[in-house]
Length: 552
Image (cartoon, rainbow, N blue to C red; front, side, top):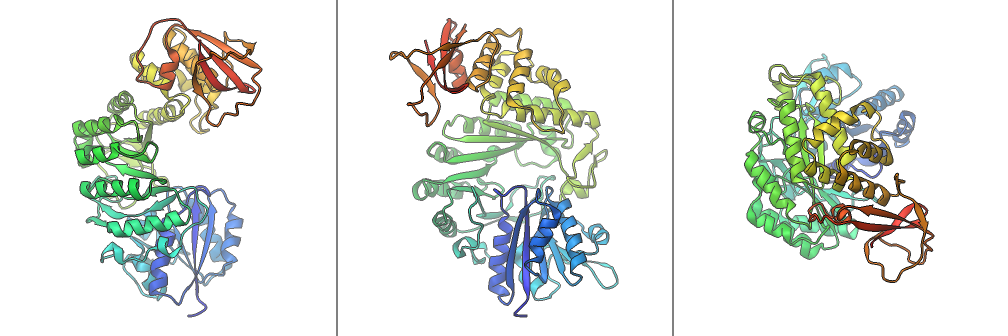
Protein backbone atom coordinates (compact mmCIF):
# COMPACT_ATOMS: atom_id res chain seq x y z
CA UNK A 1 0.00 0.00 0.00
CA UNK A 2 3.01 2.31 0.40
CA UNK A 3 3.07 3.20 -3.28
CA UNK A 4 -0.65 3.83 -3.62
CA UNK A 5 -1.59 7.31 -4.78
CA UNK A 6 -4.84 9.28 -4.62
CA UNK A 7 -5.29 12.39 -6.74
CA UNK A 8 -7.85 15.13 -6.20
CA UNK A 9 -9.00 16.74 -9.43
CA UNK A 10 -10.24 20.28 -8.98
CA UNK A 11 -12.14 21.90 -11.88
CA UNK A 12 -12.96 25.48 -10.93
CA UNK A 13 -14.84 28.17 -12.84
CA UNK A 14 -11.61 30.22 -12.93
CA UNK A 15 -8.12 30.14 -11.44
CA UNK A 16 -9.11 32.73 -8.83
CA UNK A 17 -11.46 30.18 -7.25
CA UNK A 18 -10.66 27.10 -5.20
CA UNK A 19 -12.49 24.16 -3.61
CA UNK A 20 -12.10 24.07 0.19
CA UNK A 21 -13.31 20.45 0.12
CA UNK A 22 -9.94 19.28 -1.17
CA UNK A 23 -8.08 20.69 1.83
CA UNK A 24 -10.61 19.33 4.36
CA UNK A 25 -10.60 15.87 2.76
CA UNK A 26 -6.83 15.64 2.58
CA UNK A 27 -6.26 16.83 6.15
CA UNK A 28 -8.58 14.11 7.53
CA UNK A 29 -7.31 11.40 5.18
CA UNK A 30 -3.65 12.06 5.97
CA UNK A 31 -4.48 11.69 9.66
CA UNK A 32 -6.48 8.45 9.35
CA UNK A 33 -5.08 6.86 6.17
CA UNK A 34 -1.44 8.03 6.17
CA UNK A 35 -0.31 5.19 3.90
CA UNK A 36 -1.72 7.00 0.84
CA UNK A 37 0.29 9.56 -1.12
CA UNK A 38 -1.59 12.62 -2.40
CA UNK A 39 -1.60 14.46 -5.68
CA UNK A 40 -3.56 17.56 -6.64
CA UNK A 41 -4.57 18.70 -10.12
CA UNK A 42 -6.09 22.17 -10.41
CA UNK A 43 -7.59 23.27 -13.73
CA UNK A 44 -10.64 25.23 -14.86
CA UNK A 45 -13.67 24.45 -16.98
CA UNK A 46 -11.99 26.45 -19.75
CA UNK A 47 -8.97 24.12 -19.84
CA UNK A 48 -9.06 21.65 -22.74
CA UNK A 49 -10.15 18.08 -21.98
CA UNK A 50 -6.85 16.71 -23.31
CA UNK A 51 -4.81 19.01 -21.07
CA UNK A 52 -6.78 18.04 -17.96
CA UNK A 53 -6.40 14.34 -18.77
CA UNK A 54 -2.63 14.77 -19.25
CA UNK A 55 -2.35 16.64 -15.93
CA UNK A 56 -4.10 13.81 -14.09
CA UNK A 57 -2.17 11.02 -15.85
CA UNK A 58 1.13 12.71 -15.01
CA UNK A 59 0.29 12.03 -11.34
CA UNK A 60 -0.29 8.32 -12.02
CA UNK A 61 -3.25 7.88 -9.61
CA UNK A 62 -4.76 4.65 -8.32
CA UNK A 63 -7.81 6.55 -7.10
CA UNK A 64 -9.21 9.80 -8.47
CA UNK A 65 -11.44 12.01 -6.33
CA UNK A 66 -13.36 14.98 -7.72
CA UNK A 67 -16.22 17.27 -6.71
CA UNK A 68 -19.15 17.82 -9.06
CA UNK A 69 -20.93 21.16 -9.22
CA UNK A 70 -23.49 22.59 -11.62
CA UNK A 71 -20.80 24.51 -13.51
CA UNK A 72 -18.29 21.68 -13.94
CA UNK A 73 -20.18 18.37 -13.97
CA UNK A 74 -20.44 17.90 -17.75
CA UNK A 75 -16.75 18.59 -18.33
CA UNK A 76 -15.78 16.49 -15.32
CA UNK A 77 -17.60 13.48 -16.78
CA UNK A 78 -15.89 13.93 -20.15
CA UNK A 79 -12.52 13.95 -18.40
CA UNK A 80 -13.37 10.84 -16.38
CA UNK A 81 -14.46 9.01 -19.54
CA UNK A 82 -11.12 9.69 -21.21
CA UNK A 83 -9.14 8.77 -18.09
CA UNK A 84 -10.90 5.44 -17.83
CA UNK A 85 -10.02 4.67 -21.45
CA UNK A 86 -6.38 5.26 -20.61
CA UNK A 87 -6.37 3.30 -17.34
CA UNK A 88 -8.87 0.47 -16.87
CA UNK A 89 -7.77 -0.05 -13.25
CA UNK A 90 -8.28 3.56 -12.18
CA UNK A 91 -10.99 3.94 -9.54
CA UNK A 92 -12.99 7.17 -9.81
CA UNK A 93 -15.11 8.49 -6.94
CA UNK A 94 -17.13 11.70 -7.21
CA UNK A 95 -18.79 13.78 -4.52
CA UNK A 96 -20.29 17.19 -3.91
CA UNK A 97 -23.70 18.84 -4.25
CA UNK A 98 -24.46 17.11 -7.56
CA UNK A 99 -24.81 13.79 -5.74
CA UNK A 100 -26.97 14.56 -2.72
CA UNK A 101 -30.00 12.77 -4.16
CA UNK A 102 -30.60 9.25 -5.49
CA UNK A 103 -27.60 8.26 -7.63
CA UNK A 104 -28.81 5.01 -9.20
CA UNK A 105 -29.60 6.42 -12.65
CA UNK A 106 -26.34 8.35 -12.71
CA UNK A 107 -24.24 5.27 -11.97
CA UNK A 108 -26.12 3.14 -14.49
CA UNK A 109 -25.56 5.80 -17.17
CA UNK A 110 -21.89 6.25 -16.21
CA UNK A 111 -20.54 2.76 -15.40
CA UNK A 112 -16.92 3.95 -15.52
CA UNK A 113 -17.54 5.79 -12.20
CA UNK A 114 -16.64 3.47 -9.31
CA UNK A 115 -18.98 5.23 -6.91
CA UNK A 116 -20.19 8.55 -5.56
CA UNK A 117 -20.06 9.90 -2.02
CA UNK A 118 -23.13 11.58 -0.60
CA UNK A 119 -22.17 13.80 2.31
CA UNK A 120 -19.02 15.20 3.91
CA UNK A 121 -15.35 14.20 4.03
CA UNK A 122 -15.70 11.78 6.97
CA UNK A 123 -16.01 8.70 4.73
CA UNK A 124 -12.83 9.23 2.67
CA UNK A 125 -10.32 7.51 5.01
CA UNK A 126 -12.51 4.37 5.06
CA UNK A 127 -12.93 4.57 1.29
CA UNK A 128 -9.14 4.61 0.85
CA UNK A 129 -8.91 1.52 3.06
CA UNK A 130 -11.26 -0.30 0.66
CA UNK A 131 -14.35 -0.26 2.89
CA UNK A 132 -17.94 0.22 1.74
CA UNK A 133 -18.18 3.32 3.82
CA UNK A 134 -21.09 5.55 4.88
CA UNK A 135 -22.30 7.79 2.05
CA UNK A 136 -20.96 5.52 -0.70
CA UNK A 137 -23.37 4.81 -3.55
CA UNK A 138 -22.20 2.20 -6.05
CA UNK A 139 -23.21 -0.71 -8.31
CA UNK A 140 -22.27 -4.14 -6.99
CA UNK A 141 -21.00 -7.11 -9.03
CA UNK A 142 -24.60 -7.85 -10.04
CA UNK A 143 -25.04 -4.27 -11.25
CA UNK A 144 -27.48 -3.64 -8.39
CA UNK A 145 -27.55 -0.21 -6.80
CA UNK A 146 -26.21 -0.01 -3.24
CA UNK A 147 -26.86 3.08 -1.15
CA UNK A 148 -25.02 3.68 2.13
CA UNK A 149 -27.07 6.76 3.04
CA UNK A 150 -25.19 9.89 4.17
CA UNK A 151 -21.62 10.51 5.28
CA UNK A 152 -21.99 12.77 8.32
CA UNK A 153 -19.21 13.57 10.78
CA UNK A 154 -20.61 12.69 14.20
CA UNK A 155 -18.04 14.23 16.55
CA UNK A 156 -17.43 17.85 17.46
CA UNK A 157 -16.16 19.85 14.47
CA UNK A 158 -13.03 20.88 16.37
CA UNK A 159 -11.85 17.25 16.29
CA UNK A 160 -11.43 17.57 12.51
CA UNK A 161 -7.81 18.45 11.64
CA UNK A 162 -7.36 21.99 10.36
CA UNK A 163 -5.95 22.17 6.82
CA UNK A 164 -5.34 25.89 7.35
CA UNK A 165 -3.06 25.35 10.34
CA UNK A 166 -1.27 22.50 8.53
CA UNK A 167 -0.69 24.66 5.47
CA UNK A 168 -2.69 22.26 3.26
CA UNK A 169 -4.35 25.05 1.32
CA UNK A 170 -4.24 26.65 -2.10
CA UNK A 171 -1.56 29.27 -2.56
CA UNK A 172 -1.77 32.56 -4.41
CA UNK A 173 -5.56 33.00 -4.54
CA UNK A 174 -7.21 36.41 -4.25
CA UNK A 175 -9.51 35.15 -1.48
CA UNK A 176 -10.01 32.05 0.63
CA UNK A 177 -13.09 30.23 1.89
CA UNK A 178 -13.37 29.26 5.55
CA UNK A 179 -15.85 26.96 7.25
CA UNK A 180 -16.79 27.87 10.85
CA UNK A 181 -20.10 25.97 11.00
CA UNK A 182 -22.08 23.27 9.21
CA UNK A 183 -25.78 22.86 8.62
CA UNK A 184 -28.71 25.25 8.77
CA UNK A 185 -31.51 25.88 11.21
CA UNK A 186 -33.94 26.47 8.37
CA UNK A 187 -35.66 23.97 6.12
CA UNK A 188 -36.11 25.78 2.78
CA UNK A 189 -37.35 23.21 0.29
CA UNK A 190 -35.06 24.44 -2.53
CA UNK A 191 -31.85 24.23 -0.47
CA UNK A 192 -29.39 21.34 -0.11
CA UNK A 193 -29.06 22.13 3.62
CA UNK A 194 -32.76 21.56 4.27
CA UNK A 195 -32.14 18.04 5.60
CA UNK A 196 -29.34 18.98 7.98
CA UNK A 197 -30.05 18.16 11.61
CA UNK A 198 -29.35 21.51 13.18
CA UNK A 199 -26.08 23.43 13.10
CA UNK A 200 -22.63 22.37 14.28
CA UNK A 201 -20.02 24.96 15.14
CA UNK A 202 -16.26 25.21 15.38
CA UNK A 203 -15.29 26.83 18.68
CA UNK A 204 -14.27 30.47 18.56
CA UNK A 205 -10.79 29.40 19.62
CA UNK A 206 -10.53 27.18 16.54
CA UNK A 207 -11.89 29.91 14.27
CA UNK A 208 -9.31 32.38 15.56
CA UNK A 209 -6.49 29.87 15.08
CA UNK A 210 -7.63 29.14 11.51
CA UNK A 211 -7.79 32.85 10.69
CA UNK A 212 -4.33 33.43 12.14
CA UNK A 213 -3.01 30.62 9.94
CA UNK A 214 -4.65 32.11 6.83
CA UNK A 215 -3.35 35.56 7.75
CA UNK A 216 0.18 34.20 8.12
CA UNK A 217 -0.15 32.60 4.68
CA UNK A 218 -0.93 36.02 3.21
CA UNK A 219 -4.72 35.93 2.90
CA UNK A 220 -6.66 39.11 3.62
CA UNK A 221 -10.00 38.39 1.91
CA UNK A 222 -11.98 35.63 3.68
CA UNK A 223 -15.34 34.25 2.57
CA UNK A 224 -17.19 32.31 5.24
CA UNK A 225 -19.10 29.40 3.72
CA UNK A 226 -21.46 29.13 6.71
CA UNK A 227 -25.10 29.01 5.61
CA UNK A 228 -26.28 31.75 8.01
CA UNK A 229 -23.72 33.80 9.91
CA UNK A 230 -26.33 35.18 12.31
CA UNK A 231 -27.92 31.79 13.12
CA UNK A 232 -26.53 32.21 16.66
CA UNK A 233 -26.64 35.91 17.48
CA UNK A 234 -24.33 35.75 20.50
CA UNK A 235 -21.70 33.88 18.50
CA UNK A 236 -22.08 36.29 15.57
CA UNK A 237 -21.41 39.26 17.86
CA UNK A 238 -18.33 37.59 19.32
CA UNK A 239 -16.95 36.84 15.88
CA UNK A 240 -17.57 40.37 14.62
CA UNK A 241 -15.69 41.69 17.64
CA UNK A 242 -12.57 39.62 17.07
CA UNK A 243 -12.74 40.27 13.31
CA UNK A 244 -12.37 43.96 14.16
CA UNK A 245 -9.89 43.59 17.03
CA UNK A 246 -7.59 40.78 15.88
CA UNK A 247 -7.96 40.83 12.08
CA UNK A 248 -8.50 44.50 11.27
CA UNK A 249 -6.61 44.23 7.95
CA UNK A 250 -8.84 41.43 6.67
CA UNK A 251 -12.09 41.64 4.73
CA UNK A 252 -14.92 39.19 5.41
CA UNK A 253 -17.80 37.99 3.24
CA UNK A 254 -20.75 36.76 5.33
CA UNK A 255 -24.19 35.33 4.54
CA UNK A 256 -26.85 37.05 6.63
CA UNK A 257 -30.54 36.25 7.07
CA UNK A 258 -32.17 39.73 7.41
CA UNK A 259 -35.37 38.24 8.84
CA UNK A 260 -33.48 36.88 11.83
CA UNK A 261 -31.28 39.85 12.66
CA UNK A 262 -31.14 40.72 16.36
CA UNK A 263 -30.45 44.32 17.50
CA UNK A 264 -27.14 43.31 19.11
CA UNK A 265 -25.86 41.95 15.78
CA UNK A 266 -26.86 45.13 13.93
CA UNK A 267 -25.17 47.23 16.60
CA UNK A 268 -21.93 45.29 16.23
CA UNK A 269 -22.13 45.47 12.43
CA UNK A 270 -22.43 49.25 12.70
CA UNK A 271 -19.02 49.37 14.42
CA UNK A 272 -17.16 47.57 11.61
CA UNK A 273 -14.53 49.47 9.68
CA UNK A 274 -15.88 50.69 6.36
CA UNK A 275 -15.14 48.16 3.62
CA UNK A 276 -14.21 45.35 6.02
CA UNK A 277 -17.51 43.46 5.61
CA UNK A 278 -19.43 42.34 2.54
CA UNK A 279 -22.83 40.87 3.43
CA UNK A 280 -24.93 38.61 1.26
CA UNK A 281 -28.58 38.84 2.27
CA UNK A 282 -30.68 35.91 1.13
CA UNK A 283 -34.17 37.33 0.58
CA UNK A 284 -35.48 34.97 -2.16
CA UNK A 285 -38.97 36.56 -2.01
CA UNK A 286 -41.04 39.08 -0.07
CA UNK A 287 -44.29 37.24 -0.91
CA UNK A 288 -45.77 35.55 2.21
CA UNK A 289 -47.50 32.88 0.13
CA UNK A 290 -44.23 31.97 -1.59
CA UNK A 291 -42.25 31.97 1.66
CA UNK A 292 -44.77 29.61 3.23
CA UNK A 293 -44.66 27.30 0.20
CA UNK A 294 -40.86 26.94 0.46
CA UNK A 295 -40.90 26.81 4.29
CA UNK A 296 -38.58 29.76 4.66
CA UNK A 297 -38.36 30.76 8.33
CA UNK A 298 -39.12 34.47 8.10
CA UNK A 299 -41.98 36.85 7.49
CA UNK A 300 -41.77 39.50 4.72
CA UNK A 301 -42.21 42.25 7.27
CA UNK A 302 -39.30 41.09 9.43
CA UNK A 303 -37.12 40.43 6.39
CA UNK A 304 -37.77 43.87 4.92
CA UNK A 305 -37.19 45.53 8.28
CA UNK A 306 -33.92 43.64 8.75
CA UNK A 307 -32.68 44.59 5.29
CA UNK A 308 -33.64 48.25 5.87
CA UNK A 309 -31.66 48.26 9.11
CA UNK A 310 -28.62 46.85 7.31
CA UNK A 311 -28.89 49.41 4.51
CA UNK A 312 -28.90 52.25 7.02
CA UNK A 313 -25.31 51.34 7.83
CA UNK A 314 -23.05 53.09 5.32
CA UNK A 315 -20.00 51.08 6.39
CA UNK A 316 -21.26 47.82 4.81
CA UNK A 317 -21.60 46.44 1.29
CA UNK A 318 -24.93 44.60 0.89
CA UNK A 319 -25.61 42.05 -1.84
CA UNK A 320 -29.25 40.85 -1.90
CA UNK A 321 -30.65 37.73 -3.61
CA UNK A 322 -34.02 36.96 -5.21
CA UNK A 323 -35.16 33.71 -6.87
CA UNK A 324 -37.61 33.39 -9.80
CA UNK A 325 -39.77 30.33 -10.37
CA UNK A 326 -40.46 29.42 -6.75
CA UNK A 327 -43.68 27.53 -5.93
CA UNK A 328 -46.76 29.82 -5.78
CA UNK A 329 -44.81 32.67 -7.38
CA UNK A 330 -46.28 34.49 -10.38
CA UNK A 331 -44.54 36.92 -12.72
CA UNK A 332 -46.55 39.70 -11.08
CA UNK A 333 -45.35 38.77 -7.58
CA UNK A 334 -41.77 38.51 -8.85
CA UNK A 335 -42.00 41.99 -10.36
CA UNK A 336 -43.36 43.24 -7.04
CA UNK A 337 -40.37 41.65 -5.26
CA UNK A 338 -37.98 43.40 -7.65
CA UNK A 339 -39.62 46.78 -7.16
CA UNK A 340 -39.52 46.32 -3.39
CA UNK A 341 -35.83 45.53 -3.64
CA UNK A 342 -35.19 48.53 -5.90
CA UNK A 343 -36.89 50.81 -3.38
CA UNK A 344 -34.66 49.39 -0.63
CA UNK A 345 -31.61 49.89 -2.91
CA UNK A 346 -28.87 47.46 -1.80
CA UNK A 347 -25.42 47.69 -3.38
CA UNK A 348 -26.13 44.73 -5.65
CA UNK A 349 -29.21 42.71 -6.59
CA UNK A 350 -28.92 39.18 -7.90
CA UNK A 351 -31.91 37.47 -9.48
CA UNK A 352 -31.60 33.85 -10.60
CA UNK A 353 -34.14 31.39 -11.93
CA UNK A 354 -34.67 28.44 -9.61
CA UNK A 355 -32.51 25.33 -10.08
CA UNK A 356 -33.76 22.03 -8.67
CA UNK A 357 -30.67 20.69 -6.94
CA UNK A 358 -30.29 16.96 -6.18
CA UNK A 359 -31.30 16.01 -2.65
CA UNK A 360 -33.66 18.95 -2.13
CA UNK A 361 -37.30 18.45 -1.29
CA UNK A 362 -38.44 20.34 -4.38
CA UNK A 363 -36.42 17.96 -6.55
CA UNK A 364 -37.62 14.82 -4.81
CA UNK A 365 -41.24 15.88 -4.33
CA UNK A 366 -42.01 18.58 -6.90
CA UNK A 367 -45.43 20.25 -6.62
CA UNK A 368 -48.01 19.82 -9.33
CA UNK A 369 -47.18 21.63 -12.58
CA UNK A 370 -43.47 22.03 -11.86
CA UNK A 371 -41.15 20.99 -14.70
CA UNK A 372 -37.37 21.23 -14.85
CA UNK A 373 -34.47 20.34 -17.08
CA UNK A 374 -33.21 16.88 -16.10
CA UNK A 375 -29.68 17.87 -17.22
CA UNK A 376 -27.41 20.40 -15.55
CA UNK A 377 -28.04 23.10 -14.50
CA UNK A 378 -31.45 21.55 -13.62
CA UNK A 379 -33.14 24.88 -14.31
CA UNK A 380 -36.86 25.33 -13.80
CA UNK A 381 -38.83 25.21 -17.07
CA UNK A 382 -42.41 25.78 -15.93
CA UNK A 383 -44.59 25.99 -12.83
CA UNK A 384 -48.34 26.14 -12.39
CA UNK A 385 -48.06 29.93 -12.01
CA UNK A 386 -45.23 30.73 -14.46
CA UNK A 387 -45.12 29.34 -17.99
CA UNK A 388 -42.07 29.20 -20.25
CA UNK A 389 -42.55 32.78 -21.49
CA UNK A 390 -42.88 34.12 -17.95
CA UNK A 391 -39.63 32.43 -16.92
CA UNK A 392 -37.92 33.87 -20.01
CA UNK A 393 -39.10 37.28 -18.87
CA UNK A 394 -37.56 36.55 -15.46
CA UNK A 395 -34.24 35.92 -17.24
CA UNK A 396 -34.61 39.33 -18.91
CA UNK A 397 -35.23 40.91 -15.49
CA UNK A 398 -32.04 39.28 -14.23
CA UNK A 399 -30.09 40.52 -17.25
CA UNK A 400 -31.36 44.05 -16.76
CA UNK A 401 -30.44 44.16 -13.07
CA UNK A 402 -26.99 42.77 -13.72
CA UNK A 403 -26.38 45.10 -16.68
CA UNK A 404 -27.92 48.40 -15.53
CA UNK A 405 -28.31 48.27 -11.74
CA UNK A 406 -25.25 46.41 -10.46
CA UNK A 407 -22.43 48.23 -12.35
CA UNK A 408 -21.00 51.04 -10.16
CA UNK A 409 -21.04 53.42 -13.16
CA UNK A 410 -24.81 53.04 -13.57
CA UNK A 411 -26.27 52.17 -10.18
CA UNK A 412 -27.01 55.70 -8.94
CA UNK A 413 -28.49 56.67 -12.31
CA UNK A 414 -30.75 53.63 -12.13
CA UNK A 415 -31.78 54.45 -8.55
CA UNK A 416 -32.59 58.04 -9.50
CA UNK A 417 -34.69 56.90 -12.47
CA UNK A 418 -36.51 54.36 -10.32
CA UNK A 419 -37.38 57.10 -7.81
CA UNK A 420 -38.55 59.61 -10.42
CA UNK A 421 -40.26 57.52 -13.12
CA UNK A 422 -43.39 55.55 -12.30
CA UNK A 423 -43.08 51.83 -13.11
CA UNK A 424 -39.56 52.52 -14.40
CA UNK A 425 -38.22 48.96 -14.18
CA UNK A 426 -41.06 47.39 -16.16
CA UNK A 427 -41.07 50.15 -18.79
CA UNK A 428 -37.34 50.03 -19.32
CA UNK A 429 -37.42 46.22 -19.58
CA UNK A 430 -39.97 46.47 -22.38
CA UNK A 431 -37.81 49.07 -24.11
CA UNK A 432 -34.50 47.15 -24.01
CA UNK A 433 -35.87 43.66 -24.76
CA UNK A 434 -35.43 43.95 -28.58
CA UNK A 435 -31.78 44.94 -28.09
CA UNK A 436 -30.84 42.09 -25.74
CA UNK A 437 -29.33 38.74 -26.67
CA UNK A 438 -29.51 36.86 -23.37
CA UNK A 439 -27.17 34.17 -24.65
CA UNK A 440 -24.27 36.55 -25.31
CA UNK A 441 -23.83 38.15 -21.92
CA UNK A 442 -23.72 41.85 -21.13
CA UNK A 443 -23.33 44.37 -23.92
CA UNK A 444 -20.53 47.00 -23.70
CA UNK A 445 -21.04 49.64 -21.01
CA UNK A 446 -21.16 52.49 -23.53
CA UNK A 447 -24.00 50.75 -25.39
CA UNK A 448 -25.89 50.39 -22.11
CA UNK A 449 -25.50 54.12 -21.51
CA UNK A 450 -26.70 54.83 -25.05
CA UNK A 451 -29.87 52.74 -24.61
CA UNK A 452 -30.68 54.30 -21.26
CA UNK A 453 -30.11 57.77 -22.73
CA UNK A 454 -32.45 56.97 -25.62
CA UNK A 455 -35.13 55.72 -23.23
CA UNK A 456 -34.88 58.88 -21.08
CA UNK A 457 -35.41 61.34 -23.96
CA UNK A 458 -38.51 62.89 -22.34
CA UNK A 459 -37.27 62.63 -18.72
CA UNK A 460 -35.15 65.79 -18.35
CA UNK A 461 -33.56 65.31 -14.93
CA UNK A 462 -32.94 61.60 -15.38
CA UNK A 463 -31.43 62.28 -18.78
CA UNK A 464 -29.09 64.92 -17.33
CA UNK A 465 -27.83 62.47 -14.69
CA UNK A 466 -27.38 59.75 -17.32
CA UNK A 467 -25.27 62.05 -19.49
CA UNK A 468 -23.23 63.19 -16.51
CA UNK A 469 -22.45 59.57 -15.55
CA UNK A 470 -21.68 58.69 -19.16
CA UNK A 471 -19.05 61.45 -19.47
CA UNK A 472 -17.64 60.56 -16.04
CA UNK A 473 -17.17 57.00 -17.32
CA UNK A 474 -15.06 58.24 -20.21
CA UNK A 475 -17.63 58.08 -23.03
CA UNK A 476 -18.56 60.76 -25.53
CA UNK A 477 -21.92 62.42 -25.12
CA UNK A 478 -23.98 64.50 -27.54
CA UNK A 479 -24.12 68.25 -27.01
CA UNK A 480 -20.75 68.36 -25.28
CA UNK A 481 -17.46 69.55 -26.70
CA UNK A 482 -13.84 69.35 -25.63
CA UNK A 483 -12.14 72.63 -24.86
CA UNK A 484 -8.54 73.57 -24.16
CA UNK A 485 -7.85 73.52 -20.45
CA UNK A 486 -6.37 76.46 -18.54
CA UNK A 487 -5.37 75.89 -14.94
CA UNK A 488 -7.46 77.68 -12.30
CA UNK A 489 -6.23 77.65 -8.70
CA UNK A 490 -9.74 78.47 -7.43
CA UNK A 491 -11.23 75.23 -8.69
CA UNK A 492 -13.45 73.26 -6.32
CA UNK A 493 -12.91 69.54 -6.94
CA UNK A 494 -15.94 67.40 -6.10
CA UNK A 495 -14.50 64.08 -7.29
CA UNK A 496 -11.04 62.81 -8.15
CA UNK A 497 -9.87 59.48 -9.52
CA UNK A 498 -8.06 57.42 -6.84
CA UNK A 499 -4.24 57.42 -7.17
CA UNK A 500 -4.39 60.25 -9.68
CA UNK A 501 -1.01 61.44 -10.91
CA UNK A 502 -1.17 65.20 -10.48
CA UNK A 503 1.87 65.67 -12.71
CA UNK A 504 0.03 64.58 -15.84
CA UNK A 505 -0.61 67.55 -18.09
CA UNK A 506 -4.29 68.24 -18.71
CA UNK A 507 -4.87 69.37 -22.29
CA UNK A 508 -8.68 69.37 -22.54
CA UNK A 509 -11.86 69.44 -20.52
CA UNK A 510 -15.61 69.02 -21.03
CA UNK A 511 -18.09 71.55 -19.68
CA UNK A 512 -21.63 70.41 -18.89
CA UNK A 513 -24.56 72.58 -17.76
CA UNK A 514 -27.35 71.03 -15.67
CA UNK A 515 -30.64 72.26 -14.24
CA UNK A 516 -30.01 70.77 -10.77
CA UNK A 517 -27.21 69.47 -8.53
CA UNK A 518 -26.74 66.38 -10.67
CA UNK A 519 -23.26 65.48 -9.32
CA UNK A 520 -24.61 65.10 -5.79
CA UNK A 521 -26.95 62.32 -6.97
CA UNK A 522 -24.16 60.73 -9.00
CA UNK A 523 -22.18 60.50 -5.77
CA UNK A 524 -25.04 59.80 -3.37
CA UNK A 525 -28.56 58.55 -4.28
CA UNK A 526 -29.91 60.06 -1.05
CA UNK A 527 -28.85 63.61 -1.94
CA UNK A 528 -31.25 66.54 -1.56
CA UNK A 529 -32.54 68.05 -4.81
CA UNK A 530 -31.54 71.66 -5.49
CA UNK A 531 -33.15 73.17 -8.59
CA UNK A 532 -30.54 75.63 -9.79
CA UNK A 533 -28.38 75.76 -12.89
CA UNK A 534 -24.98 74.20 -12.23
CA UNK A 535 -21.96 73.81 -14.49
CA UNK A 536 -19.46 70.97 -14.09
CA UNK A 537 -15.99 70.68 -15.57
CA UNK A 538 -14.63 67.20 -16.43
CA UNK A 539 -10.83 67.32 -16.58
CA UNK A 540 -9.48 64.77 -19.06
CA UNK A 541 -6.31 63.39 -17.50
CA UNK A 542 -5.92 60.21 -19.56
CA UNK A 543 -7.06 60.67 -23.16
CA UNK A 544 -10.83 60.82 -22.84
CA UNK A 545 -10.86 59.37 -19.30
CA UNK A 546 -11.92 61.77 -16.58
CA UNK A 547 -9.42 62.34 -13.79
CA UNK A 548 -11.38 64.84 -11.74
CA UNK A 549 -14.66 66.78 -11.76
CA UNK A 550 -15.09 70.42 -10.74
CA UNK A 551 -18.24 72.35 -9.88
CA UNK A 552 -18.18 75.92 -11.27
